[in-house]
Image 1: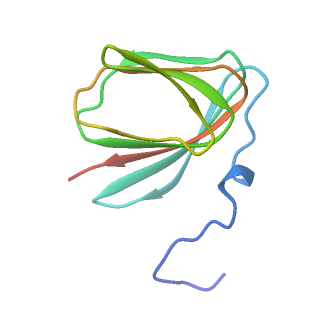
Image 2 (image 1 turned 135 degrees about the horizontal axis):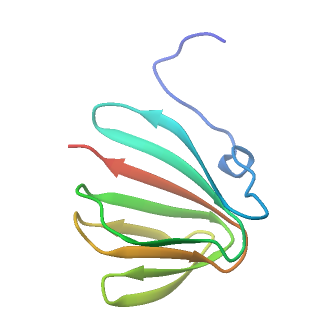
Length: 107
């Protein structure tokens, strides 16, 4: 493959297959500014409440999940976009199999 000054994925949903039981993550890109991770969640899987010390963005690619953001609980489905400031408590519970893109800002 030829070296290019950019990174391109034609279809993020094809980059990770959600497992039947468990959570799969794949780092798609990493630089000094950002880390991009694609997650696949099996239906019913959960990331328990945690925080990140840097800002983060979630883009729902496929499926439906219940997200807890601070004191709020929201239903997120394909097409949803969430910005989280540093240190916001959050958790994710996949209602169906889910593919989710996470961008962790490093600066």
